[in-house]
Image 1 (cartoon, rainbow, N blue to C red):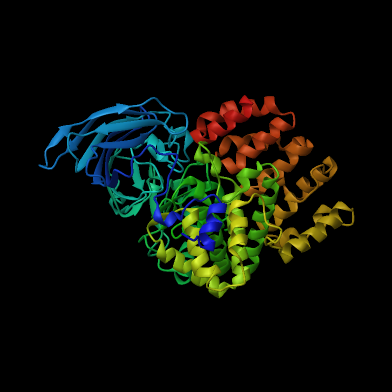
Image 2: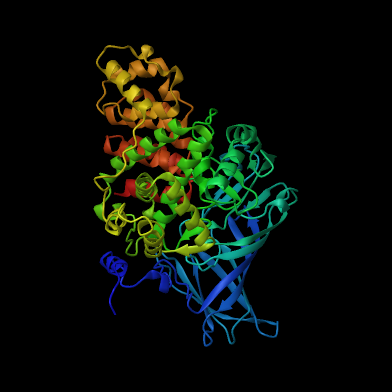
Length: 615
């Protein structure tokens, strides 16, 4: 058979066949998806704060793909399995045999269940363990209210298996329902219809009618109150941060409305936000219907709400159209970063959107210097590594720049049509990079020939680093900041004469991030005296200042830095600081701070920082 140019190109890129004709192979799951698929989960769980565990059962509704198959293989990690029951053809329940294999450090333990006949449903009775990587248990003193315990999940990438025995791969999608029992004064919420959580009584029912990948199954429980922002949006939060969160994020409805116009109607009903304790290791998590959000973005001036735009954008990219494996993560985060920036432009203007592009691009270029070249490819090869290793600026910002490149080449009107069609075509589906390449070639590259070649697209996707003709977003505001920064560095302006009264946080970040890394202590003192940067209440600005100060030995930051590292667990804002402290001779101080702060950090943050000190 004569190969088409597209097939040949895909083969050269590492695909021996068109992925459209095959099922994605996810190396991070034990699940036997070719034999059986779980189409619906029902969870019945007790939230046990005293023992730091979820206990109960999960019921899988099964769709058998192979007539001879009698085995269901699930992913688990640090779960205790009590028993397995299954419902046969006659509707009666029977006990099933099961084996739990030895734990693999990355994939966890393979749970193999054998039935005497093909089961309609299977119930696994189990409990999680306190060290579950996908759950964090907080004592009352570790919360804002100081009165109630708090528990929340973080299932991405493969941490759902640490609290649910499940086919833990983004290649499959499942609907779910749940009954969650908590102490009566604790409210539970989930990535589902939360109308059953409005009355705080300790007995909560949830339903998620749209099929989602397992990493989007999420739960939270604590001293949560509820306040609406619009007919479609609301905040769940501890009372101490509820009103401030509502004021900060009350543009969320405008974001939804603008995105509906650009990319098609929002498909999930409500879009609510759960404000988590400061220990949450990420900026946000796009759990459908209920994004999980760090309190570090409640700055009081809406300067960091692009994070809300990002999590909302996932409602189209990632949640609606999902990467089939974690090596295809860029399909999720690259598209989401692009859509996020378009939302910001629509709601807050072009100037702010370009500033955010420029900051992210500068951050990517800095990170590319410290990442092994193979890991700077969009279509990453993990080769058995933990998929958490896939998360860097590469899938986010390099992916965004690839899409910006296509937008610039084809024009926004054509590219918007392409993206909207892509979301429609793969709605509620998972796809690989190879499948995307076929779609891209058919619906954009060949549709408008002579603009961008398939070879150029493959360079972006499969080659390390950035192409030489990659977009380099430039902000006029940053050019002006550079001018006054140079004047200050040259002694032509005093710090108090810098025109900062109208600077946005983006201009501040550009200013601090581009100061000489060996800036004199006199200059540091002058800046700090003029603008109180050491005690900044904006977490992003404080982080940028601390990174500069650690590197050049500015000692005045350390009491405030101790408070910063002890008070939040967002990895973006603490991990680089621990690395910088160790690198710059402050290992003993950093280790002392970490030992005190570690119990309040999420397991994911603990693992990352443990590795820094264990080197």
